[in-house]
Length: 289
Image 1 (cartoon, one colour):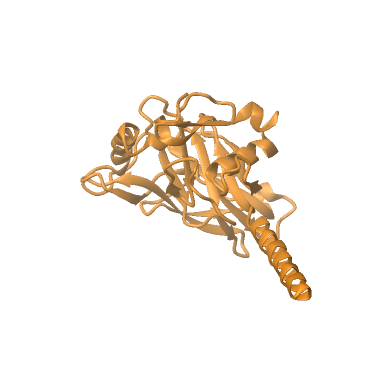
Image 2 (cartoon, helix red, strand yellow):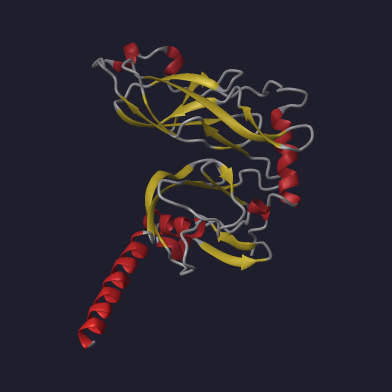
């Protein structure tokens, strides 16, 4: 009988060890984090972050991802640049990248999150930002159709930019972002998206290129796509081979954006974001201390 109990105890111990190992294996995940500041500049750009359960709530959440990102990339770590608190709307942002304005937003896989307690998993993409428009919170959240891509042999890549807006009945919709100016590795070009939000972007540097965009009509949360350029041949004198339309420029953006549908999609965003600020969008303004 003693041998039977000893055998059962050994089995139980083995099961316990295996179960614990399995749980620990799920207690971390690699999440891609992007953080932009109140000027629309990237501070963290689609960086892979090893996320662990730093707050001990038994789950991997947006809070964990942003905390770990600050630990890795903010000077002074999360203690200096990041904080969260539990308020009327749940776990909320108190400080993001050293900013304590309370005008914050965050998305997971291009979908608006309800609170910092929303879960994240392996391979998820967290995009947190400080509103550029800190009065009306009119920043439009935008994203490319892909987050990673390879160029063709000539170094070209085609991307489509989409923004989050509202229709005439205030239902959330996705709209193409027209006349957005493309930037490559932080340098603006004179390439703009068309009426479908699409642009063909030539690249001239092999390896990873960071593609983003901006508009003049309304502030947008900068989108990001990492494009691996695989150019068959690159001339030693690249300036002579770069089309004029692809060279970095310093000219002003168009002052207006074309209308989309019955109401401008960008008017939807401006009005819709105000609606968000008053209720459904607690993600932005409810994060104040």
